[in-house]
Image 1 (cartoon, rainbow, N blue to C red):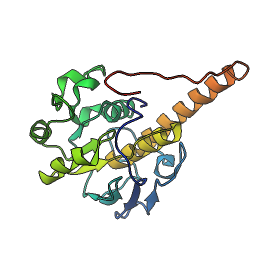
Image 2: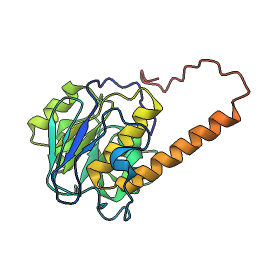
Image 3: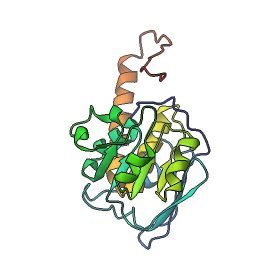
Image 4: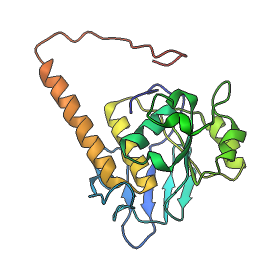
Length: 217
């Protein structure tokens, strides 16, 4: 969930409004680790959560209004962090395309590789025939060519904190109709962070830099 935190994307926090009859308006703006849509109780990864009804509109980090008329069955991710989130939510069976950097995930190598020499290949993404493309840690310039091909693309703001990561998890859960699973994932993450803080509360905490390679930290 944390990979590529220092991505190049930037912009306003996303907001989500539900148009379907099963849920009211939702907002993830300024959200903490487990608030808003992610507080819903899920019915399992193979179904749409009751609080995650479709259709709905979501405004992403570029200010684009993304409309999903129904639960997306074919999802392509152009960043490993989005792929890992979907695996954590138990929604990997709906993923049809991933970045080559996501091949560490169990079964990811069986999905289409949508990577170019740098970034994502527009042609490879189009070939996956996705209902939804998830694009965290990408620039707006990377997203626009995909939209020009008529694809539905959700662009995330850059994550710079644990709260941002939790918000991205919540948003992905809402986009794919897995709010309950997203809430559970965030709860597990928050518990792990709290446990680590408690175990290290009596020791020095030096500032550290963790290079991930390829220009990412």
